[in-house]
Length: 346
Image (tube, rainbow, N blue to C red; front, side):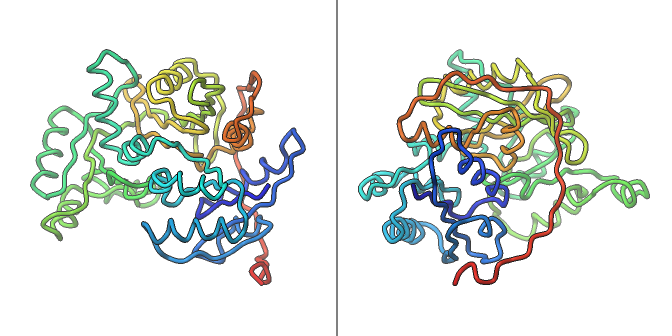
């Protein structure tokens, strides 16, 4: 079967390897594209190509043409996955199965952190308990930013902010007014910390800026929960705790596993999704929900659950049996040098 990954994280390399080493002995030919020919995961593909630097409808047209030209059977998108979910009928018409949630409205909601929070708050108003939400405000002017900061500070919160639409920690900043000390200079990473005054100076550069979430900073342990599911059933939920540095721990955290089951019952997310939470004062609060493979999912696969291949089986309408994950695993990783194959695109 021919499988295509468009612009992805570098760690998609691990997902490719797990799909190839599936227990069923099924063979895959892996295609990969990226706008940067030196993207490392391209070195792990059977066929690699550069893709144009475009977005929106022109990019979807490129995807459809790529699938036709290379006779792709399965498409696993990251870039433009929300828009792709709206065009699934076009891919199905040319015989391509796409590993993306088919509910495009839900995809759009989860892609917007504020909309996702409001969806959860609405569910709880209707009596469905899902997860606690941090105190937050959505702002796009300097005056609203100042008001949000003041309100959160008066509640006793340390304050942070991040873009409403974005991946991972991109754009995330912690407001801290005492960052010029020797301790910060020599011992602490301060690239994500800035003073309130400096934040205001930056945001004042535009009368209206893209929506920001200003919210309470959560300073407890952080967990990422990787899940594999059909529309009707959640087969596995693997919580991994982010430890010191690069350490990750696969833990049988029953509260978080039940949280994942509640999410699935509410939203019916199929294939693979990821929930990120962080604790504050002993309460787990939501960071975000990703309706796709997470960048660190390969750590969760150490539990014995081959997430990417199981998702493909579900996409193909095949059954998967009972899963028995292993917990209590601590792991980390080393950097490894890689000589780039200059003839890869020849």
